[in-house]
Image 1 (spheres, rainbow, N blue to C red):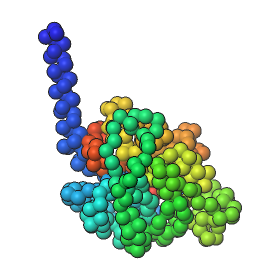
Image 2 (image 1 turned 90 degrees about the horizontal axis):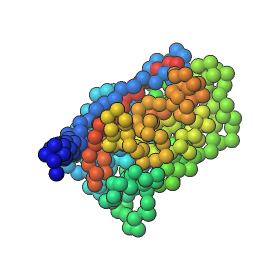
Image 3 (image 1 turned 30 degrees about the horizontal axis):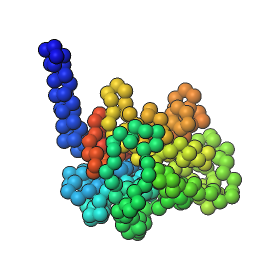
Length: 328
């Protein structure tokens, strides 16, 4: 082998080792708070701050992650939305509740993800590059105590949006909510609107408060929010058709492994790679961009964790997001 070729191959190997070390030892614990502004409230409304938590995948021993999540309470958000995959181990209940304790004191809402129901199992990472990564389900998965977790969330006052609707009063505003169970497990069943007319009123079209009997029991609401763990297209389409002002999702891990200047390689669902994380529009461009007049605001979080069997992140830092909702 020519000396130049050997040096090049050696350099590539060394670079690969360095990238793996960075991804598994540094970036996977390099948590970041993203802050985005969403002009979605009716005209004249004061800002509303929403903390979006996603995909902690907590296991025992992750004290730094626990402390970082607890410290997010200093943001004093008005509302907390948890889009699931909170844990990944039978022994994680105590650390998880400790991490979320200050947030459970706030108004909140949640849905569960696949790893809230069962613990992850080892799988070939190459499967994530397939059009559908799920494959055959494990015949005897380790069930996690998800019923207790959901009960703890509900007892704290958080709204359970598992294939259901609800309303919540936050900072002087009434918000209607619609959510689904995990679409990655095909457990999503979009809840019926109740048979009432779902059309926006003239006031809401002009940026005012909407009156929507099907969502708010006949009372006026200031905002309609969709919540899902996995942002499959069928779920986003249903929430868009339901006239959601904003949809909040997790699951994708932002691709978890990204290529600089290219972005995520996969989303682990049928969502396009360009929407793997961040603030977007659905089904078209963002509502504040040309061609986005008919779109719904969509926020997808890259989340805070990974599967314990693939504890790496590259060019995709683990994150939580503070969304500041402002008037249109």
